[in-house]
Image (cartoon, rainbow, N blue to C red; front, side, top):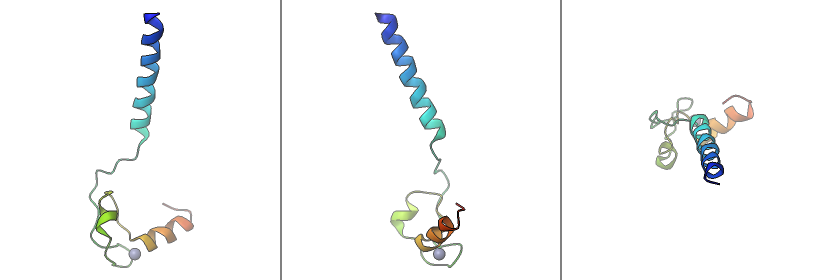
Length: 67
Ligand SMILES: [Zn+2]
């Protein structure tokens, strides 16, 4: 019985580790202005980290199929 619980815990931990490993990392700081057009990037958007484009330019980029 205890073995089953241990095994279940191991599986759960492995799943969590995998999710964390695959999660995007937002360590990089955001830029205050868009690289493309120079528009201010909203503070709320900068808070995510790693944002170099304004919402408009990011949307255009994603529609082109690149990210
Ligand atoms: Zn822009």
